[in-house]
Image 1: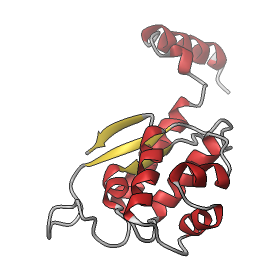
Image 2: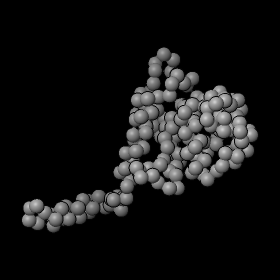
Image 3: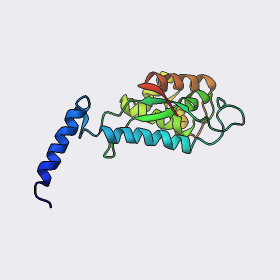
Image 4: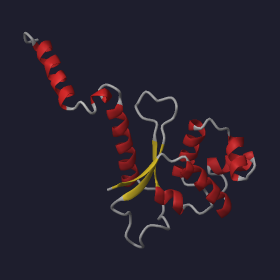
Length: 167
């Protein structure tokens, strides 16, 4: 190792912290990992959209260039791999009008149940179905009526932290 390398590196870090003092408190906090994970989730959704067209997609045009995303807050306990926030396309949420819940809806339900510390029975009561019926919807075994789907959408939307556009 070159003589004085640690001192040079320490001085460089202090210069960076001074120049970027507005965000210096985030250095070493894992914020970069959380943002990269959120970016990765949005990119994954854009590259691998749910199977089948959404009723809200423009006809015969495939995926839109940009998507409006809904971000659900992070879980109380973080994983070893960064953020536990969840991004889901608003098209997927609003496009589900009943029937078998798409994988993104199922994932968002599990996320929100864990984040809000709710049991299956709690959410079932909230959306007006039996616990076993809710579990079947959550597992994709049976579909939901349009009315139940609307109440599930409302449950997910009320938990949203932000809604933004991904281009």
